[in-house]
Image: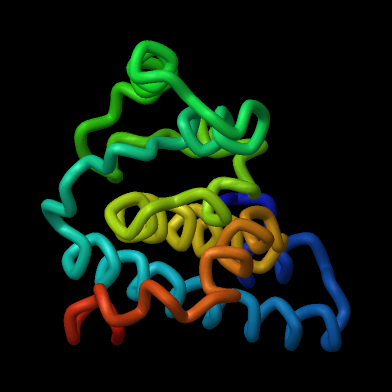
Length: 150
């Protein structure tokens, strides 16, 4: 989890006022729940196969509209991750447009990575846009199994 927000013990040690401590308590509890949700996401989306439309392919479709097979493979090579859990948070920066170009497999592959990133940054809001845009359309929801829906 992102350590941007102080824990309650640290807030008390620094002499924070009671209102700030109460807010800190709510944030700490929410961050604990976010951690549990991350664990559930990791389990539910285990072994989702790598998609044809990776992050850089999505960017290519956004920028170029039509991609030759050669260009498609060139862009896919920029995304070496075989499992979504291999995708490092800094590799997700700047790809908020991805879900507008994702195919079904790409949506299922990258959704858990972006959800976990958002939850790891909670409550800063980092990663919110990507998760929001992934869920604007309900077209892909039928692809999720019961555990993934939960």
